[in-house]
Length: 378
Ligand SMILES: [Zn+2]
Image (cartoon, rainbow, N blue to C red; front, side):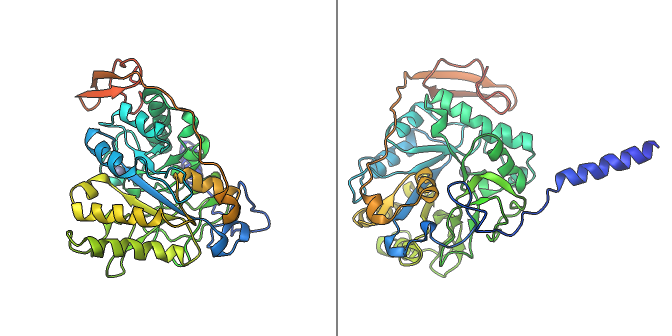
C-alpha cells in the first residue's frame, strides 16, 4: 500500500515537471498585440523599406564608477537621426552595483533591466535552477533595484539570465507570473538572414537552441527578444559581439568597424529584424581600437534616417503595435518621469557568503546587504 502511494507520488511528480509541448503556431489565433508566432515575417506585414531598423545597444553586469565613465563618454548626449536621444539597455547584476549611478542611467532615459542578484557560478546552477531560485534571483531583483535606485518598478521590464543560461520552461514561467515582459537570453545562430523577430511562447517556437534547455511548453505573456548572433571574421556565430573567436587585430580600428557594419547590414538590407549589439563594458575599455570602432559605428548609424537606437523595451512596444516608418519618424521622443537620488554611502554585512560590502544607494541604508531571500536587506 505504502509502495503504491510512493509510486503514485513519483509519477505525479514527473508529470508535473514535464509540461505538455506547445502546439504549432496558428497565425489565425495568435494575433498582436499579445501573441505573435515565432517567424521572420515583419510585424504589420510592411515591406523592409517601410520598416524602422531598430538597434539595441546593451551592457551587462554591475554598474560601477569605472564602467560608468565609459557609458558617460560614449552614450550620453548622442542622438538618432530624428533628433531623439538614443536608447541603451543595462542588464544589471546586483552584487557590487552602485545604485546612485543606476539612478543616473535611468534619468538619462536609458532602460534598466534584470541580470540576477548574485550572478553566481557555475552556469549549471542556472540550467538547473528551480522556480524558487529564479523567483529570488530575478523577480525579487526588480523590487531590489526599484527600491535602492529609486526608480519605478514598472520601468523594469526585461530579463537577461547570467551566461544566457535558461532553465527551459521554468525561466519563462517565473517571468510570466511576476510581470516581466520580455527576455533577452536566447541566442539564435541559425535564423539570422532573414532574421527572427520578437515573438511570444503561446505556441511552439521555431528557434534553434544553442544553450539548452530552452522552453518547450505554451507560456503566454512574456516575449522572447531573440539574440541574433554576430558572425565573426570567419563566419562563425557569436551570441554576444564580445564573444567572437576570430576577430581583427585589436589595433585595427577599420577592420573592427567593417566587422560591425557587416553584421548590421545583414539585418538592414534584409528583413530589418532588430539588430542587437550586446557587449560588456570591459571589452571596449581594455581594447581602445575596438572602442574607437564602436564609436565610429554609432556615428555612422545615427546618421541614417531609417535607423533608431532604442531601449530594448521600445522594440517590443513597436512590435506589439507596428506602424510604418514614415509614421514612426513623426512620433515624439520617449518620455519618462525623472526621479531624484538622495545618495547615501552604506556599509553592510551579508551573512550567507560572510562578506562586507560598501555601496551607494538612494534610500536609507539597510540593516544587511541585500541578497537572495532578503532583497531589501531587512
Ligand atoms: Zn553577466
